[in-house]
Image (cartoon, rainbow over all chains, first blue to last red; front, side, top):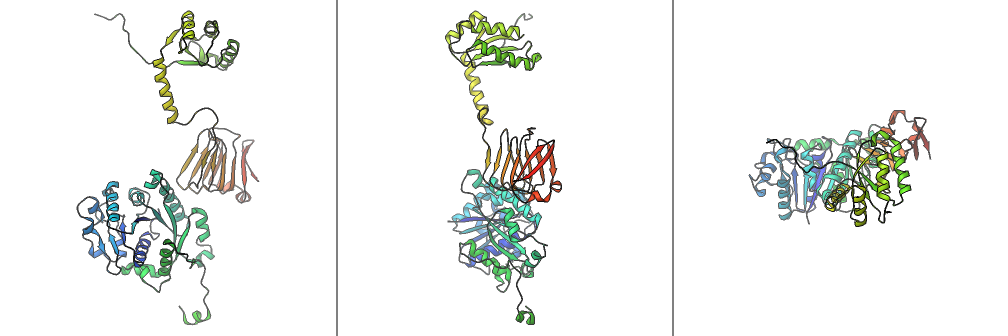
Amino acid sequence: MSRVVVVTSGKGGVGKTTTSASFSTGLALKGYKVAVIDFDVGLRNLDLIMGCERRVVYDFVNVVQGEASLQQALIKDKRVPNLYILAASQTRDKDALTLEGVEKVIEDLKEAGFDYIICDSPAGIEKGAQLALYFADEALIVTNPEVSSVRDSDRILGILQAKSKRAERGDEPIVEHLVLTRYNPARVETGEMLSVEDVIDLLNVKLLGAIPESEDVLNASNAGSPVVLDENSAAAQAYNDVVDRFLGEEVEHRFLTVEKKGLFKKLFGK
Amino acid sequence: MNKVIDLKGSILSLTVLKLFSNDIEQTKQALEAKVSQAPDFFVGIPVVLEPEVENLDPTFLALLVELLHQKQMIPIGIRTQDEAIKEQANYAGLAVFTDEVKAKKRSKEKAEKTGVEEQGGLKTAMVINHSVRSGQQVYAKDRDLIVMGSVNPGAEIIADGNVHVYGAIRGKVFAGSQGETTSRIFAQKIDAELVCIAGLYQLSEDILPEYKTGFVEVSLMNEQLNFKLL
């Protein structure tokens, strides 16, 4: 059975698209058939991070408006089998999306046998973000360990619980997962950042994983390759843990405390 | 040709006096008590009687009409299905309003009631089984409010009665919002942006830090918010 997963945060720039890219790639690497949709019409980014920006012919809006078929618009990832990207349109705005159109696309993807449909939400709480979360079965709440991001996540959680299809129909509520990105244990210790405990205490959502702050993330984005594919990176390992936990495996949380550098590491650097 | 008269149907708003007792003395006392609260208000107002009891004493309506006249009200009719009461009404010079009107009015009343909230009777507290999140607002009208989770920053909870929160209040909290000064706030922890009872409020920075730690009761004392650790 297909599951629709929205990646959302309220606040911009916290790592939604990075998370969408790595999460969907991670699921595909596990053998699932995954489609990832960029809902950020007008500010499309996902295709850049997935490295397929030069292969976009038709986009999500074309499909919603019936100008192209889903098969024409789905871009097959070159690195990972079973991974497909539906890019956003850069030339339109969010009014180009309609609830009926989005529903049709999601239904068609389900019929096409996709196991997971990942919806990469735009920032904000307006139409684009509401459409991205409306059909969701599960939600990844991407949050940075700082107060404004946490508050915005709180806001979007309220909207998930009130304005999604599941909420409106009184079905089982959306399953919520917390993904804490840009986590830097050293800065938590000095009090510059909120700790995992602070964030969970406020949001009251189960932690799916903390992604350590790492320059690998930026490098990967610039290279157009999801960071999860960079096996040596701590961020990649953290995203792999996130995927495992999402699929129900018990994996101990990592990267939450400052790594004590041993003598060997001190002598030879990294 | 100019019209001399014209008969037209019209829907007027009238005061209905509901009667729940068939004891004329009791009714008389209740009426006098009511009128004495605002004597001017009742002068000259047309009144329709609506008995909710049966077996009215034969002289009941006549005595009541007499009393209403004394109080300068003008009884114009009665709304009833009871044949005996209809007969009495004839003698007392009251118009009888047909059932049809009543039925319509009833169904309308019912619709309004379900549309708003149940009125009258015991109003139990409104219970919210989860946390109230940023941007959400909860209002418990004419009743207490119980929140089983926390009230997060940027959220607002408002009750006309007391407020109980079994988590931390980090947003805004209003108790006794219609001015009920005996309303109180109870919370596992108060680190609120604003605490307000019956219009008197304190901001976060004015709340002493020791009250931000444990189970707290807030009440109003001499027009001041009074915090107490429980």
